Amino acid sequence: MTTLEDGHNQIAARDRPAVVYLYTVALVAAVGGFLFGYDLSLMSGAIIFLETEFALTPFWYGAVAGSAILGCPFGPLVGVWLADTIGRKQTLVVSAFLFMVSAVGSALAPSMMQLIAWRFVGGMGVGLASTVSPMYIAEIAPARLRGRLVVLNQLAIVIGLTLSVLVTYFLSFGGHWRWMFATEALPILFLMIGLVFVPRSPRWLAAVDRYEEALRVLAKINGRTQAERELEDIRDELGEESGGFGELLLPGVRLAVIIGITLMVFSQINGVNMILLYTPTLFLEAGITDAPDAILNSVYIDTWITLCTVIAFWLTRTFGRRPILVCGTIGMAVGHLLMFLNFTYQLPTAITLGAMLVPTGAFTLTLAPLSWVVLSEIFPNRVRGKAMSLATCAMFASSYATVNVFPMVLDWFKGRFGHPGGTFLIFLGICLSCSAFVWLAVPETKDKTLEEIGRSWLHKDDVPGK
Image (tube, rainbow, N blue to C red; front, side, top):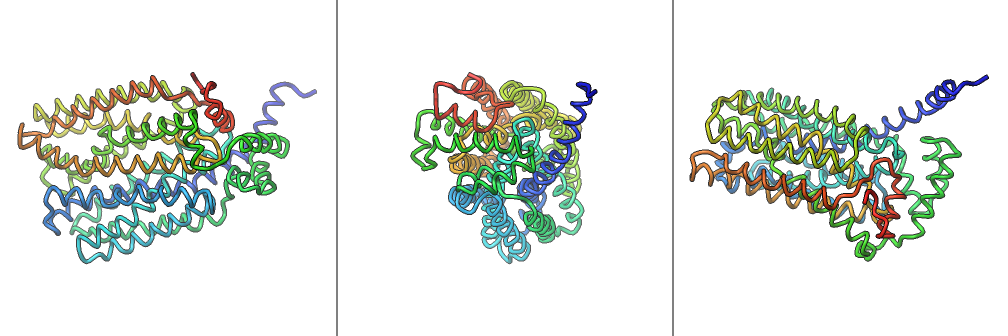
């Protein structure tokens, strides 16, 4: 006689291969996230040597540091068409190609302007990958695993950040900034090879009427019976959509787009990304005089955010999206207050490190992964590519503006008050504003299927979590 426990064990045994398969596919897609983190973080170590090599003024310092980010908004703009036309998987192939061209070009660039140009190309790859990787993972994952699998993409970003710090540290002896950019070629090759073996997104396949292929992918994840039910649900939801840009202006969908754009802009202008991008520079401001030591101290920050991202898997599985975001943004505000006090009273370097850990930890536990989770799941299927591309484009545009303004704001506060602490009071206000926005506007989407969430916007009176 089969007991209830035996039944649960049989289900677990049946699900295990599918879960392993899902995580394997998500890992390949998450290499796009790894390259996102690795590529952008390389500049935090290289910029110290580029400042000397090209005699950068504060304006050109920001221009060089933000050159990749300048290209990032153009990736999603191209991705609007690519993700819907050739599919999520093939768009990741295009992003890998742009990464490779940028890595080689940046390593060989003979002048500052050519370096900016090649970094711009890489930024387009970052923009494509950062849009499509979480989108692809969300579309292939069942509701029960979607949050954790999308967070896997964030973990890949953080690992990319951490590894790039170690690479730039070892290459900083002698100032080998060209080799810093060249090292990106290895993970790019891994992504190109891995993409050969992963399936296409089942929801994209269904959207272009390739239902048999979609069914095969879904069956490999959830079994034939569940796959047939899921495909029927996808077809029903797709039947309610046109997929055109005009659909983005429908009252419910428009609200989802506004929420997505606003949340992604907040994820960039909250100040923590500036701490991560300029960590070595901030350590130099705090009193460290040796460039390699300033870079090495960044490892503590990157190790910390890696640990926090791992903990975020548990948070995402246990709690809803909204409470995590609200608590996290308040924690970030507290961290910025500590940063202000640290620079105002010229505290020791060890205290500077401790002050950095609070906002970076709060960000990495909450807003960093959850902004991508929410963005990847709130839109209807046919317009997901377009809506995510617009939101990601806005995110990178705001990021580029922040990266360029940050050095000049630091310089102004230093000139006016003798330290850059006032900058962090601005970020404190932004974080509190983000917390209020999440509480008032962001819906709860945990454990809902993409089709349930999509229909709620098409029928705007039934917004999830409201």
